[in-house]
Length: 273
Ligand code: HEM
Image 1 (tube, rainbow, N blue to C red):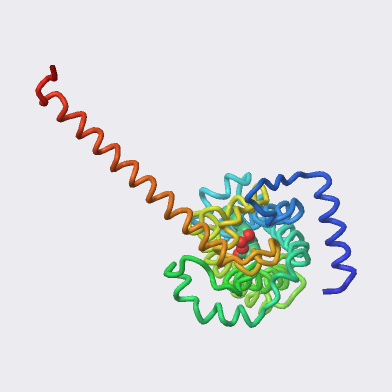
Image 2: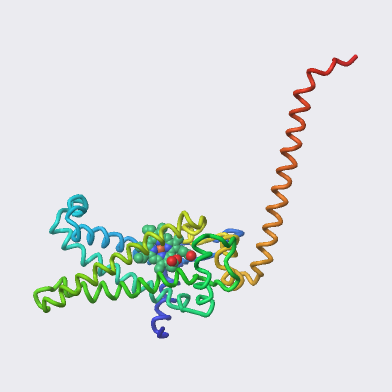
């Protein structure tokens, strides 16, 4: 990434940090600053709008209930390329913003070999070398980069189909629709991973922070980098504390049980002198 792009990104981060606010409470870490969050949601909004209008144009069955939401068929057709351009534009800035942490490393190759265990949710905590993003997140990012370029280079001939050869328009339709299907599948997995599959992830894109426990569980190398502490040690300490709490709760329940039973037998005892 050129230093000019890096400088632009840093200036934008500073500017947004001054205007917005991220409160990092005790026991939490800053994950995504305001600028990253604004870009992410702008990308997400224009992606969904492009997807909806695109599917309405693609399928007559969907068309008849989606198109009215956008003011009818002709307006839907008119809006779709503009939504697509806005998606590409915001994603371009997101690309600059995330280029560095999305670089592929040896740790990602190792993660790919364990992908089965990740999908089946077999590991309680990620391997120690998993940094700010894991390889699955990086793959999603690079798939969007490729799709964003494909959407643009195939979208333009479809938009200006009277000035380009027919074969190019026909080919563009096929590639454009395939890229959209890949993106739809990725989007479904992404929303699931960012919400239900990993509780505590969604807040990183709303208030910008995550708990330390979330960080050492899903991104131990990043946790170590920002806190200087050993993620395994903190995990073991938290586990011991949790075990202690569970034992104390069990002991308390047993005690309550005994007291209640004691209370129940009390009336049967012969009254004292
Ligand atoms: C609308 C529902 C969406 C939700 C709930 C959502 C949620 C999230 C969350 C919580 C993160 C942070 C993950 C982390 O810090 O580890 C994230 C990251 C990201 N989001 Fe989204 N997102 C949505 C839509 C989108 C869309 C439409 C795109 C692009 C087409 C997108 C692209 C990304 C990328 C590239 C990342 C970084 C890599 C990753 O975490 O997979 N997101 N998203």
